[in-house]
Image 1 (cartoon, rainbow, N blue to C red):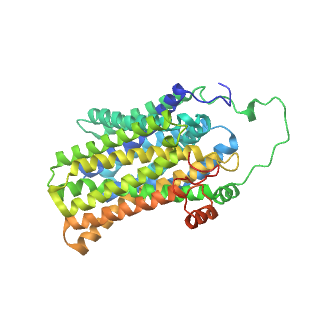
Image 2: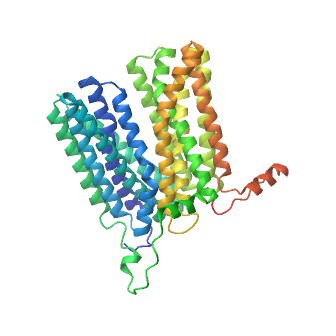
Image 3: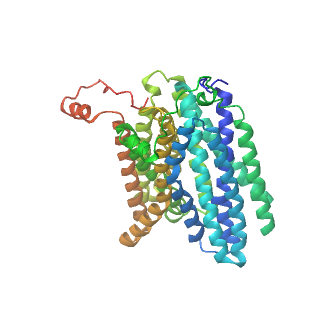
Length: 454
């Protein structure tokens, strides 16, 4: 493959395999080991919670990882290296969990190192993979590409959780380490095979004429340059606020169903499946509309980002009403439609990320993608904590569970309204916004510059 050739559908699927491999190791550490620590080892639930938060916190290094791939000119070495670190972190996390049974201090110290390695591996591999997609996928395929890659990651979650669950029964410490090693080794091999020959040779390495080397840029300077770009800065704020709203609902929806609607554990689990089904529908709808109508307004990533945030706000507002009304509210339909809105929003956000990675100074795509990935990771790390803490505080202040949850869902809806406003403003210079507010022109869409979502 030549360096400038766009990646076709088969290449997109191959990158989806890499994302699925990445997801397989991550779900092993954040889900399977979580359950082992709490159930089999009877450790406080706060312990795995802190470790998962650590793996998100470490991902503030994403901009530095993206900068390294920008300087080197190739993404494949960073993806492979990141997968290697991630695989080692997965095995190390399992070994640390085993040590916690007899030597908790040693096990926790090992777990800190292992979960930090997981975060670093995800940062290197995930940032470079998205940058490669952004640079080499044609614009009219980006929505479908984002959907394919994310669905394959979800498939990696599901397959790994199912297979690992079967292999771990009956549980023994030795079996846990063996399963973790098998999953990590398989994921690494799948990623390497999927990437083989996909990216092509860098022009820097294939040029036949030797020229004087340009001075290597400094990371702080590159990051400052990207942050000075209005579009990149606006999109960073949008990613943080929207992902905070997106993730804050996860840990309180099922408790809400149990306390207000008297759902059993089985029914609340089925409710989560219903929401995920809605997310899948929203993703597929976004992929179809973004691909078939890519040249029209209806296929605009900006339009879908705004609409997805607004629809998510409406869905959360519905849950706010549900906390007041109770069983008279069509709760399950509300949750399904919230999932559809979340799915459409998430693909629009990823597609917009791919579009805007190349909007600005050249050779800074990795830094931009890393900056946005770091904002997303921090938001996800904070989301569960903020959602559950706000729920507990509202319950203490209000006293009634239904009303307390309503307050929290209402706050999350407001965050999505803010996100919709932020998405609308991305790429529109402030003078243009001020002029629009002074001289409204009904029926005429605002003119966007080259950095706008499209």
